[in-house]
Each structure stands twice: as structure tokens, then as C-alpha cells.
Amino acid sequence: MFARRGTGMVHQVVEGDPSVGGRLAWLAARLTIRPTLALGSYVANVPWPWGLIDVAAGALTPAPGCIRATIRLPRCSARLVRAAGVLPADGTRRVVLYMHGGAFVTCGANTHDRLVTTLSNYADSPVLVVNYRLLPKHSIGAAIDDCYDAYRWLRGRGYRPQQIVLAGDSAGGYLSLALAQRLLGEGEKPAAIVAMSPLMQLAKSPKQAHPNMRSDALFCAKAFDAFTDWITRAAQRTIPAEEIYEPLDHIRPGLPPTVIHVSGCEVLLHDARLAARRLTAVGVPVQLRVWPGQMHVFQIAASMVPEANRSLRQIGDYVRAATDRHDVHVGGYHRSNLSSASHRPVTKRHNEIHADAVAGRGRCVAVGSC
Image 1 (tube, rainbow, N blue to C red):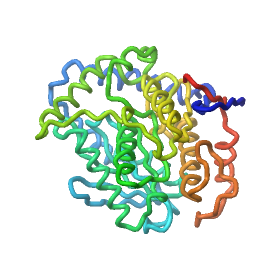
Image 2: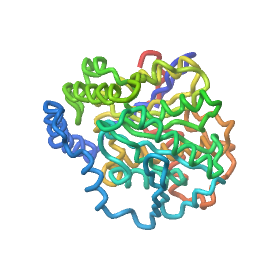
Image 3: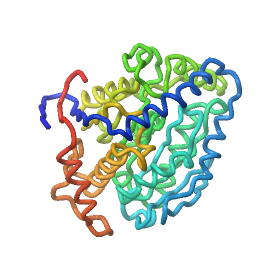
Image 4: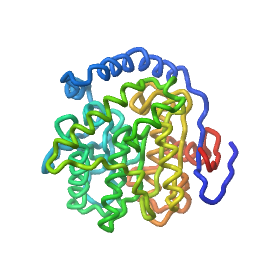
């Protein structure tokens, strides 16, 4: 591991080569999901039953000992998830507000149940997953409103901003940053932002021109044409017409410390690096972890891919560091002298998590043009 530091530079960690499990997951996604999304992109106006994906995922068995509860929000539902041994969401400790991915058109608490449960375990925290309203029936603005309502529900439970971590994957990364910006305008700053393979910019051209378009396991260039078309049409149907919001055009000081985990061969590496640069430029502590050879949101395969499990361990450690003591610098994974807020005993496994996160199993670099 080596490191360089410099003013205004992004702190980037490049992990090692993918395992056999990681390579197989990439190949499986490339052979199945990418052709399906490509077909849907070329006939984007067909009313594909995207909602059935989350319904079908509801048949999956939850992790042993996991506790789940449905929460009613003003315009949607949410699911409160606790892994075995995690204390209730009573406002006394930390909590993660999770925005799932799915291009704003599909997925939900069911598809992301195992990912969220694993995160709950490693973060030692309840996780509230927002089943926000989806395209094409609703606009992205409606999704942001739903995530805001979920945040307010947590505040009503007694949580302070410093106890709440905003997290999301893919489109959920966009929602996490957009929500943080809305809250900053109200004078509230959550403890941190966690983004996995995040979509941070709606503009399609930079992604379509990125060299990773050839190596992405899920997305072809045409997928982004359909994606932006869905977004534009949904925005135009609102009264008055909704302006397309680009979070990266509204970066300013005061946003929460941020950690980003992204595949090194996915096209959203562009968005991850751009977000890291712009946040760093205004003084927001950012760590960018790049995982070579992985598929988009590889963390969803934590039970099969070692890197996915390790990524979630590192993220869990980051969540703990961000919430255990609020004045700690969490641009990296520094947990020394943290107060012990956890009610669970420190096990050998948790010591290994901490050692992995601090020492890093990859190359640590600070780059100004990553």
C-alpha cells in the first residue's frame, strides 16, 4: 500500500484484482442482465413490468434473526431492517437511511434485503429502506420528497442529524446527495453519505463516451438514452413541469463526509470520480474506493463474492466511525479514540473488520485527477 496526500486531492484506494466469485458475477450479469436492459432500452415505450422484480424478490427468505417492519410514510412505504443482535431504532444510537438503486424504475426493499441486512450487521445499526415512488409514473422529484419524508420520520423518532447516515446504491447515490443538499438548505447535516456504484449525474453523454462503456457488465450506451427519456417525460408531466436537478451542479461546503465504493470497470466510475473531485474541491472529506473487475453494485452479491462482503464490512466500519463520535475525521477509516457506543461485544470478527478498513487491502493513493 502506498499513499500520497495533497491539498484538494481526492483520496482514492484501489483494491486488488477480483476473485473468481467476482469474475463469475460480472460474467453472469454481462450474459443475462445487460441483454435484458438493452432490449428494454430499444423498446423503451413498451410498459415493461419493472415492478415485478421487487415483487418476485419478496419470495426470498430473509437472513436468520433479521427483524423487518413496514413503515407508512405520507406517500410511500419504507422497511425498517435490523440484523440479528442489532438494537431497536429508538433514537438513542445510529441509524442508516437507505435509498435503493434500480434506475428510478425498479427494485425496492425486497431486492436489496440481503445487502441491507448485511450492512445492518456490520454497521450495528437499524436500516430504513425507502420504497420511494418510481418512474415512469412519478418524477425523480417525487422520489426525493419520499426520501425526505423518511428522514423526517427518523427525526420524529428522536434521531439527531449526527446519528443518521444517508446511504444508497446506483440511483440511490443520486438520492442520497440530493437529500443531503436539501437538508443542508434547512441547516441540517447528517453524519455521512455512503454511495455504492453511484449515479451522480443524469447527463448521459459523459457516460456514453467513457471507455468503461465497453467493460460495463450491465449497461449499454442505449440504456442511458432510454433512462434520460424516462426522466424527461416524467418531469414534463408534473404541474408545473419539474426542472431536472443535477446534484453535482449544486455542491457547496458543509455537505457530510462521503465514502464512495465503485467498480473499476463500470461506466459509473465516471460519476464516482466526478463527485469525489467536486466534493473535495469544497472541503468535504471524501474517500473513493475502486474495486477492479466487479459488476455494478457488486455488494448485492455479498453472500457469493468475497469483495462484496469486504466492501460492506468497510462501509459498516465507516458508519460506526461517523456516528460513534461526531468530531472524528472520517474521510478515511480512522477509529482511534472513538467512544464505545456499541452495545454488542467487540468480537474477533469486528476487530478484523477494523484492521481491514484501516490498513486497507489495496493501494492507497491521493490523486488530483482521478
